[in-house]
Length: 288
Image 1 (cartoon, rainbow, N blue to C red):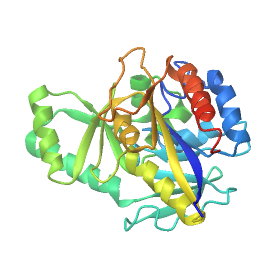
Image 2: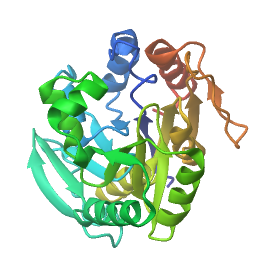
Image 3: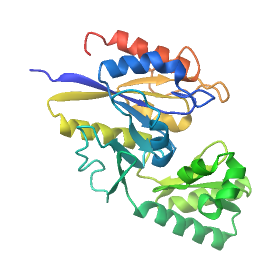
Image 4: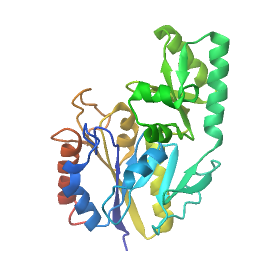
């Protein structure tokens, strides 16, 4: 007998589920439909777990979102869910867990310490010009980002990445990228900051980790993913998903994928997200 297919929605936040006001109000219809069908929602973001846990406090549906933070490097499952058997979520990676804000948070505590040691050493040896989150005071970071005190605290609560503000030349940046690659790290350039992270993590790894937890907890079901995102750092997640939706970005344009079987949302941010998820549910209604 064939296993029943169960879907998991995995989504980027900024400019995907969230609009320019950091609201998902335009996606309420689709979110309600997912909740009614008990389809898990995973937030897969460059944000920290602390940032997303604060956001999740406003979640109005019974099933809280699962959180993948720091571009796939941290995980958090709601403590009141029945799918928190997370053993082996990252294969053989060292995993530490703690309960925070009603979530069981999982991370490798050694990763960020290794990043900080490496980039400080490389900076000193090569006289590179950059500053990281670990160098800024809360007040300085607030001035740079416009975040309030509590939001700054959440943004600095990092386990596996270090955002840096690059202040040197393009040539030095290219040299820096090559140097840290030799230590097993990579860069992910964002709008204001460049994120330093371990090569073993990305958004597709975070998505796969969540799927592995569900597959272990519910072995009699086949778990598939629909992923939605708008940015280049979402591409690897979208390439690996069973069903991919690209959300056009009004400010930065629309990304393209190597795969040909993806869908393009008809609007920006949460409006496009809402339409795309409702369309997906309509397409798959015979199987959900």
